[in-house]
Length: 242
Length: 323
Image (cartoon, rainbow over all chains, first blue to last red; front, side):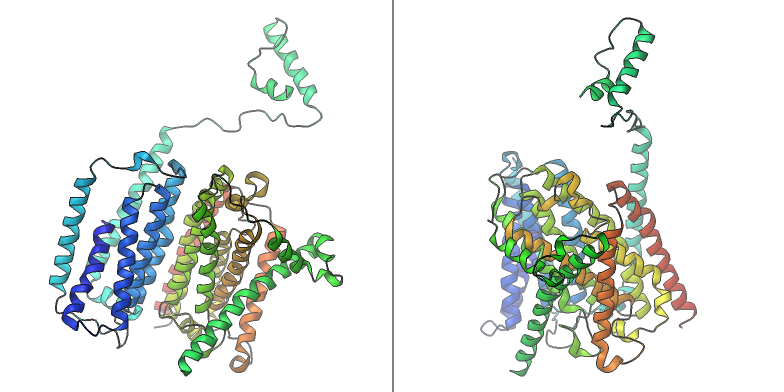
């Protein structure tokens, strides 16, 4: 999906630049293209690399590249939100999950998917559809990069809470439902696995009374079982004997 | 040409601040800790009051061999200190030190978002270091770092949002322009939550579980030596400067002061920042380390509700009394 999205961002302005004046691209357009290429490359490596954590880190480059593209289009607010949410939180969560489960250094041979051709087909189709839709929808729309910022916080906020307030609220309700669902799921699993108390082992530390307490244990054992030495599988005693 | 010169001068000043202020905080920490704990070591080097201790530290770090463990992921291991350090340099660009356009590295429209977003990126450096070291203690430290960031990013954002609501803008100079003295009691809960969450994000004591030296050696930085290790330390102190500067700007009124706001505004900013930095050091000397579950509990059951309450209070006051 990232691949497709970045492909769209990388190629859409290319078409726009052609109609705009092929021989006199501005500096912003050139840097937009270059950053787009870097983003595209990083997204490709993200998908193609066999080192899991490297993939996550290349994803940082790709997402950061998209943030730079937003900046070049004067959408400052969206750019910083992109960095805050995706680079700062989503990738950290991703790395957290990777490190908790499986993050070997070096190549993971089983990281390769058997259906890479199907995946490639889907990716190319999705990219083509996105590029076509974006180019077709915004063919006649131009962002004036020299004028006042079209994506400043004030402008974004006004359009979000005046024109798009219904989708915004619907999305927030959706997120709230996800939040409640996560809490319900975690509480349920906690109730099912009623874990035994963690610190049930008596504290036989390195205090001078260790031999003393061991003697007591043996004595008590002997008194209860009545046949000589204590049972060898008593964890408390092994701890004390060490 | 004049514009280019202006930009270059600003960048240079920010860079110099970035290089000197963290060292000043580090030196202060040596001295304050030495006084508070009755230590003799940091008071010895160089004669008078141990003034050369920091220089000695620097020489020591520069002399050490730069080692990359055999099993490590070389490139990421070497890249990690830069990823940890550079975000703080970028954040310094956006912090206004005095009134007007001249006293900030770069006026940003969405300053709060920029600052918080870029600060969050710095944690990636610790994560990369923890993973690439090929050391289980490092990996544990990296995991704890990530867990801590995820827990404390939310209250930090919420309290910053509260200030943005109060000021009606997310630009840092704009917030300072809108500041009145009674914001201080109004936003005091948010200020404390922001400061505590920032401390946790910097992994400063008492939130230094990710680098708990008595159980996981030095967390994600265990395998680092020499200058790369020094860069991580520098990132920590730059983080203190940034956090204290941000708390000053967002909650303590920045360059506002009882008098002399016009010419001497920057003195107020520096004074407040220095005072907060002292508090950071003081906390390190005073409090024992929080356990990992206590860390998470503090954030989710205390700081997040408090910051939500602060947002509610801000909204009520804003709607009822100010409009």
